[in-house]
Image 1 (tube, rainbow over the protein chains, first blue to last red):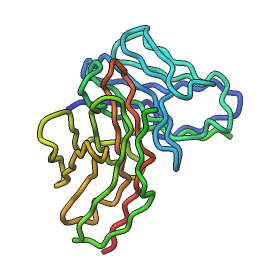
Image 2: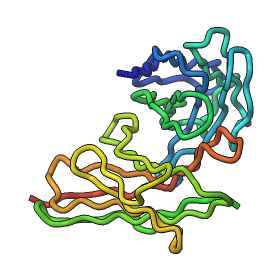
Image 3: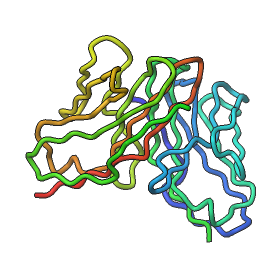
Length: 113
Length: 114
């Protein structure tokens, strides 16, 4: 079974802190994604990566950056956390583009106070 | 513009009743279509997918969905709902036209009455 794990299920940070969310997949998938999930807004793509060290902005990249130094690991970085970044963050992976579904991690619920 | 619409934000059904969750999409080419389920506090799990071929696809947990090109729809159905089906359901399109992006609907939250 494909497994996507996220470093924390719940995280509480203060405004202005630098926050790291980590995601690891064990199926050698080329693509990895970071989404933000808010009630009534569905999933919104922050960034995705299609290869090591390669990344592309999604729909809402402002205030976020990412890092992919190894194929299995994709990190989301909040350079200076703000209260409007309080949300559920979901990581996903998939094989290279085409008719392949995404596999999701359990999510990290981040609260910024 | 590409989009996915799930017109029902909340749906309540009685246990044992049939279920249909609606999904309409706008996409330039024939899309790849997905339904995911999210239990409270969890990530998304794939229920089923449509890529090509038979327009009626079967998924896990007794769910099925039908692709109707003329209506740009991909509705999810289950003949008899169980209490454990209470969750949020997301329709998604993507993976075509040289893009890595998947577009998700805003979700439908299902409540099941005992």
